[in-house]
Image (tube, rainbow, N blue to C red; front, side):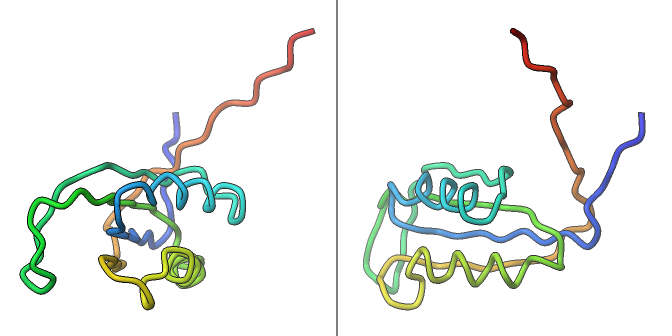
Amino acid sequence: MDIAHLRNPRIITCIVPAGMGRDLVDALYHEKNINTANFVRARGASQRSGTFADEMDKLTVVVEMDRSDEIFEFLYFKAEIGTAPHRFMYQAPLDLATLFSLPEIEELD
């Protein structure tokens, strides 16, 4: 079995207020045809904002370099990173990412 890998993969990470993660995953799926995003609920602290143990959503999505700027910009505006508080995002290169896909299945009558 051959294992396919993404070429020049990038990981985009968004830290957003609790409850936004699911909406961002849905937006990536419906508007950008990306079905590999993931989010978790976590707690964090910020000396800058004086918060401690606030619940946040951490969204991650792995994309090929060709789409990384497009998806980064999409998430930047969708999550209101530059205009609302308690939001942060970044992207970084990955050494390797495996491409997964589901097999084609015939519809049953």
